[in-house]
Length: 160
Image (cartoon, rainbow, N blue to C red; front, side, top):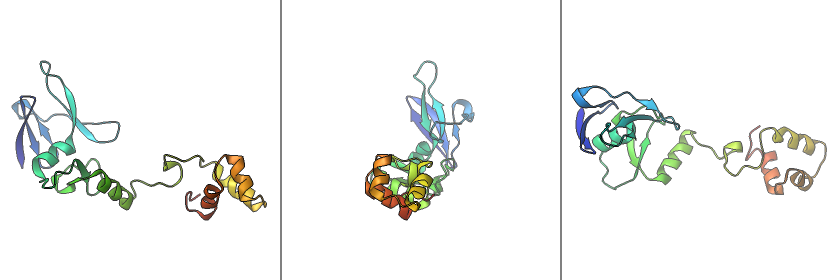
């Protein structure tokens, strides 16, 4: 399936499987942006050029959005699978829940944006505990709270 759209006064064709065609039905080359999403550059020399995420174009053309949700979610978690059957509209919260469910995001270890420990600290913490050091003393040594050390030792925040 192909749908025609107009962006900044220029016409493009979007396919249901994620291809974008410009003037004279020539396919526009895609590249991956820093986040790993395929993007195309639209516009021309007379009109400002800008990058557009392919999944957004496909979703806008082929997936209904009756609840006005603002973001596009890849159902299978693959950022490069831009077939309309793999895309859905979602809220930010729904997207994050989906990413955790698929294992694309985790809050454990260094992946937690608030992590104060590194992977190298974990074996040292376990070694100190096995040698008999108290949790509070280990916490002071690493500049964290005793509950953080307790979670590490239970495997709740680091799996190493």
